[in-house]
Amino acid sequence: MSSCCSSSSSKTTSQHCAQCGTACKSVKIRTVYHQVRFPENQGITSDNYFFCPSKECSTGYFSKAGIIIPSQQLRSHQEIQEDKLCYCFDIYAADYLNALRANTAELIKDFVIERTISGDCACEIRNPAGQCCLAKFKHLDKEYSSKSSVN
Image (cartoon, rainbow, N blue to C red; front, top):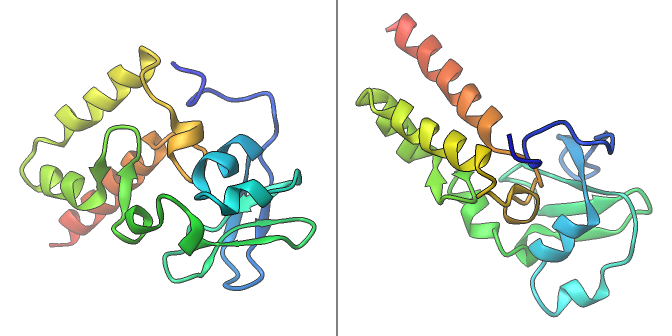
């Protein structure tokens, strides 16, 4: 698979967001530079940054040194609010859930997997979490199947 979805040599760490308490994973500085809008991206300093995935939290990124970058300053702020699933190929969670209901979700997931294998994704810079979305597809699959088995 492409390097965005393979295990990287740099170790991912996690820390809790001081504002909302959500567990947040570290992101590369490259991701932060690409995600923060101009002119705020001009003031980013090197540090270990973490992405807060909570839609309700106003923190987008924070660093070990206490630097906070508000979610409003992120290019993808609106997409986060609307539950974007795959930032590389513009797929929202609602689209994928509708496809699950229509039994067409495998087509979407297979497309993303194929594009990822061929290196056509840019998760490290397009996704504010700096991570591959394939795990999110699996999570939605699992969530949907557990709700379906209850009904």
